Every structure is written in C-alpha cells, then in structure tokens.
Amino acid sequence: MADAGDWCLIESDPGVFTELIKKFNVGGIQVEEVWSLDSQTMEELKHVFQAWQPVHGLIFLFKWQGINGSSGSHPDADLSIDDTVYFAKQVINNACATQAILSILLNCPSIDLGPDLQQFKEFTKEFDPYYKGLAITNSELLRSVHNSFSRSDPFIIDSSESSSTEKEDIFHFISYVPVHGALYELDGLSNGPVNLGPCTDDDWLEKVRPVIQERMARYASAEIRFNLLALIKNREDVYRTRLETDISLEEREELLHKIELENIKFKRYERENSLRKHNFIPLIYNIIRVLAQRGELDARIEHAKKEVAKRRKERAEKKKNAEASGSKN
Image 1 (cartoon, rainbow, N blue to C red):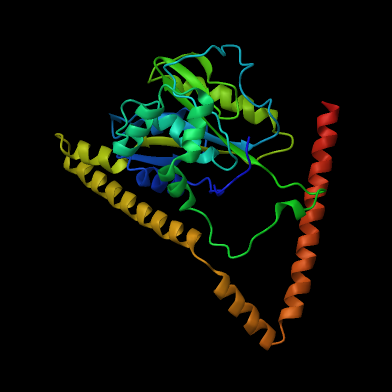
Image 2: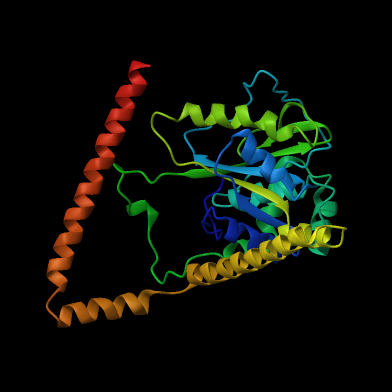
C-alpha cells in the first residue's frame, strides 16, 4: 500500500462523517455513535416512534495490529468472491475512513447516492478490487471532500525523523453491511469481502454483535479505544414522515421537540467541524507572547515537561503490563 500521499487523517466522529456524506451529495443519511452493543441499543437504532428505521451499516474503528486482523476465521465466514458486493482494496494510507463509508453507501440500493457517487459506481462496477481502490484514490471529488476535514497546520513534520522507540498508534476503519441476504465485513486491507453468514434486514444487527465483540476481545488486554458508528436514515426525515400520519397531540409535540433537538445537534456539528478546520496558531502564538511578557512562560514550560514525562512513564508501564499479561495467556 502506498503512503498517505495527499490524503489527510480525519477524526472518527458522527458530525464529521455526517457532513462528509452530505458533501458527497448523498441525501437522507446521518451517522450516529453507538455506545453499546446490547440488544436495547440496537433496537433503538432500528425503531423510532414505532416506525422502522433502516440501519444501513456499521463502521468500526480499532487499533491496527497487523495484517491478520480480519474476521475470516469466523465459523460462518465465506471468503469466496461475490460479484454482487462492491469491494475496493485500500491502496493508500489515511483513506480508510472514506473507504469504510463508501463500502456501505455503494452496497445499499435504497440509498439515494446522488449523481456524483452514482456515476462513480457505474463507472467502476466492472473494475477489480485493486482498480476500484485506485479509482477512489484518484477521484477528485472523494479526495477533496475527505481533505476538507484536514486540520489547519502550517508546519510540515518529517515522519522519518520520528522516534523509532515510540511508534505512533495506527487506527483503522472497517464496515459491516447486509448485502443480498448476507452479512459482510468489508475491510480494504483484506483480500476480499468476508461473508459472515445469512441475515435479514431485521436481524443483521444481532448477528454482527458477536463478530464485533470477538474482535474487541482480541485486543482487550492492551487496548480499550474502540469506536462504533451507524449509518442511518436522517432522523428528522423519519420524524416528519411520522408527523404526516394520524397521531396523538402528545406524540406530535414530542416529535416536534425531537426535530428541534436534531436541529440543535446539527448546528453543533457545524460549529465543531468549523473549529476542527480553523488555524489556531496565531492564537497560540499570542498566548505564548503574553505569558513571556508576564514572566510566566518558563514555569509553564517546566510544568509541561513534567506532565509529558509522567504520561510517557504511565504509557510505558501500561504497555509493559499488557505484554506481561499477554505472555501469561
């Protein structure tokens, strides 16, 4: 796989992913964070005010620990090639977030892809997985939308100068999506889609739970940083559709309140995304300048050095304990 090229790292956040999908000109989709894998949480994702709401797919973020990370060893796994599944290899670093989103969007016929993604899908549908991945990498639309979430940073950091003793953690996104009556794990770093067994639109979330739980358990001794996101139908659209039916006044008022909360949430997303892209260097420079003028800068620097040393020691101890625990097992 090639290096990062001109694809930036983006944050695993429902607000980021929702706006990214919107910028692809895909309509009626939002992303929600899933805080638990219990049955109640999964049911709440599927049902809103007695109305069934499709969950189009899940995106799972985890710390990458090598190439042997797929669920190909799952008891129901089928690694045979299925041409009905849109699968693209990841051919460049940092593109996995957008690729995980596309793995769901391009495999859900009920989603309105909009003209740009629909044209891209039609153009690449006969490509093999490698060339599909290459097409994603070379798409001006996909790359520019992805990079619109890059952090403003005037400094260029040479990765070759980074410490060899303290490697940076690498995180990876994969997708789970039902396609034509089967549950698939789509990981651009795997050789192909992993068929995890038959499912229906109603039960696939129950069937994916043990797969994700098993993957989390593999890293439980050394890693607790996981993130799970769901691609669902826009909730305001669901609420407004419900408002058009014969419902009680009490439920109508509750729906209007829910719509207001959704609007507040999306305004918060907009503000947070704006802050993510903002260049704070001038602000930081002026804070440092004022601290220096007050004679407080040296003390702050010494305090920061002590904090960094403390955190490095804690990380080293945690890693040592995790390795000791792993060797015992």
